[in-house]
Image (cartoon, one colour):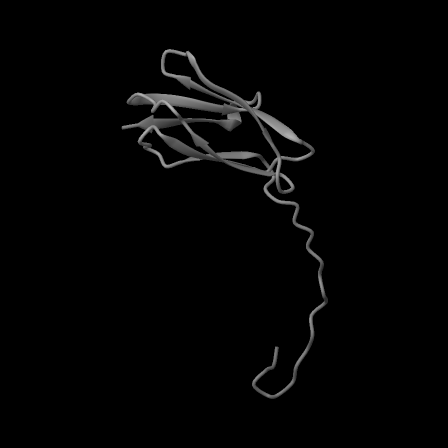
Length: 108
């Protein structure tokens, strides 16, 4: 920084080691969906190589059951395509075993 009188000083150099998000997060889009495809993003995974992913309809029936492998360190991004279009309604997607990685999505 340079002051108005021309004097300047340097600050100490600090190292910041960012390891990604502190907690895992789940995103699903588009939401609402047309029921033919869905993008699933799970970020902030630490020390995991795969995550089970399940989709349930509002009655609790299992619609999709799969295991996603971690691509980039701590992140998964997958495009799901449904051969039989999902019916209109509310669905719940769950990744892993925690409620933190649970989200509702809607099909028009």
